[in-house]
Amino acid sequence: MQNPGTDTPDRFPAQDRFAVGAQFIAGRLTKGTSGRTHAVVDPATGDEVLTYELAGPDDVDAAVAAARAAFPGWAATTPGERSDALHRFAAVLADRAEEFARAESLQCGKPLKLTREFDVPGTIDNTAFFAGAARHLQGQSAGEYSGDHTSYVRREPIGVVGSVAPWNYPLQMAAWKILPAIAAGNTIVLKPAEPTPLTSLLFAQAATDAGIPDGVINIVTGTGKEAGEHLVGHPDVVMTSFTGSTAVGRRVAEIATATVKRIHLELGGKAPFVVFDDADLEAAVHGAVAGSLINTGQDCTAATRAYVQRPLYEEFVARTAALMETVRLGDPFAPGTDLGPLITHVQRDRVAAFVERARAYARVVTGGEASRGELANGAYYRPTLIADAAQDSEIVQSEIFGPVLVVLPFDSDDEGIRLANDTPYGLAASAWSRDVYRTGRATREIKAGCVWVNDHIPIISEMPHGGYKASGFGKDMSAYSFEEYTQIKHVMFDNTAIARKDWHRTIFGDR
Image (cartoon, rainbow, N blue to C red; front, side, top):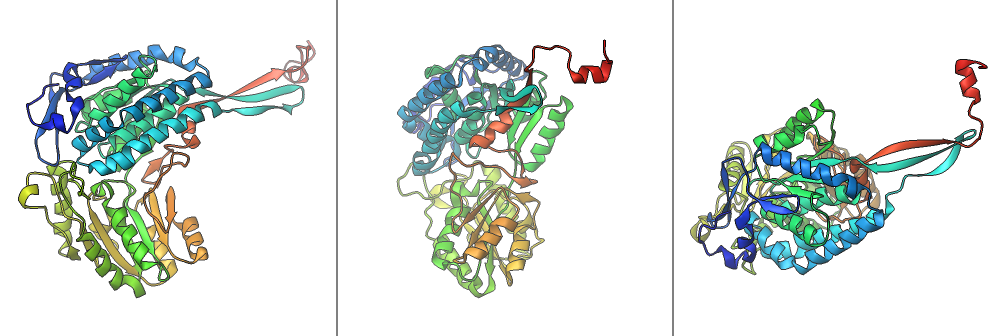
C-alpha cells in the first residue's frame, strides 16, 4: 500500500502497517498480483487514505492452498484448544480496541462513538462467545436404535470456507464469518469489499498474534468480479458464505452450485416497523429514528417501512420528522456527531435518486438533500422522512440503503401485518404495542428472521441472525451458525461378536 501523504495518520495510526501489502495469506501480509490498485477513501472528506494492490486469481489460489494445507492440523485440534486460542484472540482484540475503532470509522465514515460502543465491543463479545461455544460442538448421544447396533452422530468440520463480506459492517461481518467457521475446525479465505479492507486485515493479523496457526485465516482484497467469483467457484472451497445484495447473492448461488458447494446467504432487507394504536408513541418515534438511521441507514435490518395505525399516523409523522431534524451530521471523529456520511458519493447519489423519483408520488416531509457547506466534500445525505407513498411504489418495495424512512398508515391489525409481509424480503421487523396478544400475533405472523418487540436493531451473540424469503438462508452468530460450518456423520457399531447377522441372511441366505 502507498500513503498519499494526507493527515490521516492521526485518524488511523496503524496506516503504515500496510506498506507491505493488503493480502493476508498464510500468516503474512503480501501485495496483490492483479496489476491493479484500489484506493481506500475517507467518505467524510473524499481524501484518499491509502492505495493497495488488488488480489487476482493467483492470490486466491495461494490463499485457498494455504487454508487447505492448514485444515488437517486445525481440524485435529480439540475443542478446548480451539477455545483457548479464541480466548487469546478476544484478549488481543480488546487490547487493540481503539485501533480497530479508528480504522472502522475512517474507512466507513461511521461516527467514532458508534465503532467504540457498538462495532468493536460487539466483535470482541462475538469472539468470546465462540471461544466458549467451541467446547459445545456436540453430536448426538449413543443409542441402540436398531437391535444389536449402537449409533451415534459425529459433527465434523467441512474444510476450506470461502466467504465474501460487505462494506457496511466490515469488522463485524468478518467476525461473523470467520469465528464460527474456525471454532468448528475449518479454515477460511475471506474477501472483504474493496472500499473497506482495513479491519479485516487487522482482524486476521490479531488472530495470528493470538497464536491461531498460519493459514487458518486468510484475506484476499480483490474485486468481486475477479477475486470474489474465483473464490466462490474454486474447486477446493467446500462452502461459500456471502453477505450482500439479493442480486449478487443470486450470482453467488449460480457459481457455487456448479461445484455443488454448501451456500449460506445473508441478503437484502426492507424491515417493517409496525406501530399499533396503543403503542408508546414517544418510544416508537425514538425507535424509528434510531432504527432507520443506524449506520446512516446502511444496514439490512434498518427500519425502512414504518406502518402506523391511523389514529397515531399524523402525530407519528410530525414527531419523527422533528426528531430527525435534530440529528447532527459531521466529522465521524468529532464527539458531537450523530450521523456520518454514506460509504461513497456513488451510494449517496443512488439514495438521492430514489428520493427524487419519490417526489412524484409521495410527500418528502424532511431531508431529501445532500449536505452543503463544510460537509459538501463528503458523501453526506440528510436524514429523510417520506410519507403517503403507495405500498407498491419503488420507495416502499426496493432496498435504498440510506438514511430514508417511509411512513404509511394502516387501519386494522390484519392490514398492518399483511403490509409488513408485502415485500420480497424477510430479514427483520419490529412490532410496537402495549398489548402482549397483539405483539405475540405479530411475532408469529410476520415473516422475518428476527422480530423485535418495542425495540428495533439490537443483536446479541447468543441469538441467530438470518433471513426468510429473498433475504437468504442460514444463520450468523449463536450456536445455530455451527449448522452452516459442520457436517453430520452417522456412525454405527455392531455390538455382537457374530459377523453374520440376520440382515446378511436376508440378502445372501444361509451361506
